[in-house]
Image 1: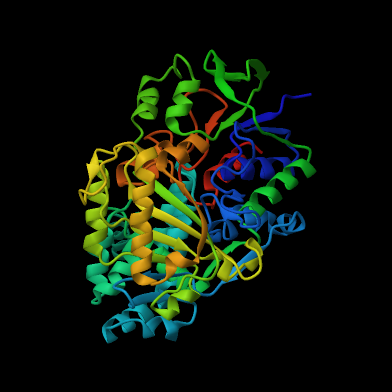
Image 2: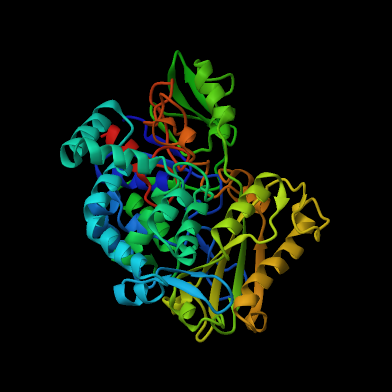
Length: 515
């Protein structure tokens, strides 16, 4: 009997690859160092009993719309996969009492805008979104291999023509600020959309970041958002159930120490001191960890240097709160949205990023406030709520404080004062908020990495998506299709094309090459 395909890491990409492969009759064994599968897609009682908090990922829209779910959605439903649809995906809390919100009700969305010209522009963007989404979605769904990429480019050119193809290429290289200033008059609306760039390491002035505010805005308007019923881990549990139903296995608390290879071909791994033979391995590892596990190297010096030089995004700090009541937002409408970004302006977001990159604790971090229990009350005891807060972005190594208030330069001592800074920002827009808090857990960037080594320095997207590290350059030129110089060793995970998020594209792509 042939040895099973080994998958290192039970994150979303590893589990999707395993589920797809086992569904096609391939023997698969997933090895996970942590006590539970899921990677960044897990849900735990982090504050009080009965309060279920998404550890990292909350928004499952990318997974719901993924190629994997298009193929296996019916079977996943049989294994318990259930989504909660959300009609009010996101809003921006600006000055206290002011907001801009995007919902699937077009008139409700437009009522937040201050400019008639912007309302007309929004309608025009919506009208052209199906065609543009087809092209952009097609790009994100295309493996970075010569054949598929050439076919995609040819088909897109045939569809768009030369001029519009060049316009699309320009758009893909544009910064969020440039696109937003070219497109909208209202600085409030620009701020609301620019916040999405910060999710993927695209500060307002970073080239290549315009695509994310555009896609999130238009997709949110057209389709809303989905989260997992009871928690994001419903995804993980359904995937593991599907894998096991087809004869595969997911083994936790197994530490892979080294990837074995000889004469340019993978031969197995050393895990917990024992050798496990394998002729095919999918490695869901941050590049630095893949390089470490290869020992003396892959035999390709440029590849090895590229893994070592791979650049991670700044860190994220998270707060998980158990609440006695919903957040008492001064802007009442904010009580209807799944995500509330807290930030005053595009300029403040740009300054925050610069501060974090310089090692400074930002004076006003951009906050992503998730309110899942407004839509899924099963995550908390009756009448209670959970709150999911990301502070983007913060440094992994602290060199100082942009406000000159926090003297700590280590995260263990900086967590408490930074928590207060974050709570102050919410309280400013929701007076009385602190009185609703029953319990809280603060997770620093280093805590995130300790729990999941792929989140290097608290980088929740496993690598910057800047143009020099995206598309054909993710994780490095010549290996954007996930292959490595070692035969039958494949890279998967957020560090690989098409990058971060719950869409699990790299895991699904890898599975297609092995069937």
